Length: 239
Image (cartoon, rainbow, N blue to C red):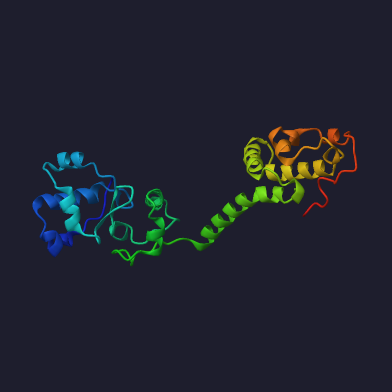
């Protein structure tokens, strides 16, 4: 696990001083073997072997109390004040803090730690660069809205099978070899929707158009379809 800071004054701490020799070793074992966020998936048998004696872990955890060690919903143990002592303030700009952030996320405690929590961690604040956080939120929003932009070009009477359309849309944008597959699909749909094919008796609904790969057709082929008096597939293209 590499080098870590050690609180030398712990030997004068009444709580630590009052522990039995075996429990003192149990505490030091957790501190030395937890990850960068203070989380450890404790293998009690291995721990006892490495400590060199039997530790009654349930009793020890009860003695440690909520302010020092907490059992997470996934069964792992969380050393509550570990981050505050080892890192001080976490920063997303510090590469060395990356493992700690990943552990907090994977163990479902990032929000608790980033906001500060009452169980011994109210003084801990994770430094998050606001501009980067906003940028990430914008990225997610844009990703989620790309399909909606496409779907917005489909007239209300043709908005059928949205779940299937979304599924095929997401597959297609990964397969299309263009700089902007989203713009490509919107442009192709716009061209198709204005074509005689889209206004014929044999017009494809959006689901079939995506599923069967008609977005890759030669647009000229859509102009050779027989027209009729049906309502146009696209009355107005939103910009």
